[in-house]
Length: 62
Image (cartoon, rainbow, N blue to C red; front, side, top):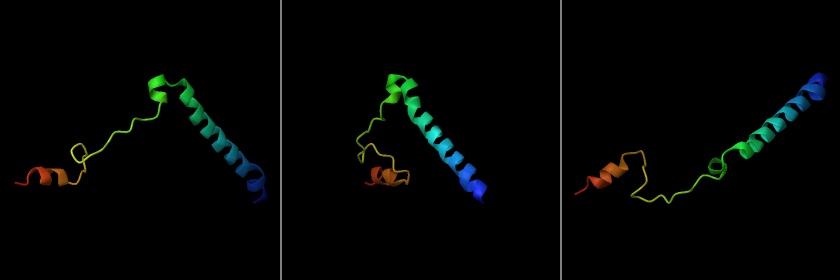
């Protein structure tokens, strides 16, 4: 158990840190339009797709 606490656990922590650092740093090499945050659209009743068939029921009423 001492081997795990002294060698394996710290190695796993360092590897996870390095993986996270690489993932975050990769944004530098993306094209400028992909490095920006995703756009947020206004979602209303007319544009939303609920996936439950509710929209079709509303449009078929009367």
